[in-house]
Amino acid sequence: MAEFLMPILTADMSAGTLVEWRKKPGDALRRGDIIALVETDKGLIDIEVFTPGVLEKIVVQPGATVPTGAVLAIIRDEAPTGMPAPAVAPPPPPPPHPGPLPLTGERG
Image 1: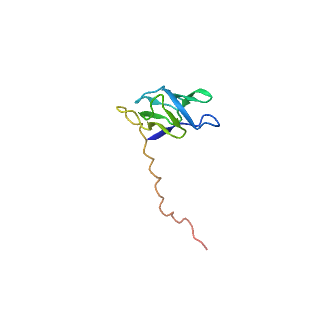
Image 2: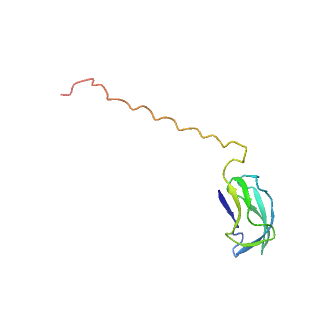
Image 3: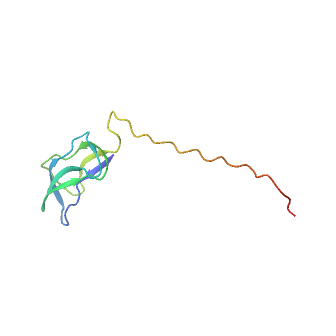
C-alpha cells in the first residue's frame, strides 16, 4: 500500500484545502488520473495520481486544510477485490550444465 500525500503545488505552498475527491474508495487508479481538487493560495488545482492501484481509503475529508506531506488517502497496489491479480510467469529453467568435453587429440 502507498500513502497519497498532499503535494507541494506552488513554490511557497505549506498547506492546501481539499475541495473534493474525484475518485471514491474501490476505484481503479491509473497514472495521470485526477484524484482530487485542492485549493491553494494560487487557486484551484487538480491533483494527479502517479501510483497506479486502487483507492483503498480516504483519510482527509473535503473542506479540511492540511499541510503539505500529510496523508490524504491510501492506495492499494494490487488488483481490486474479486479480480485476479495479474499472472507472473515463472522464470525459465537454467540451461543444462555441459559435462566435460571429450579429448580429441593428444598434446605433445
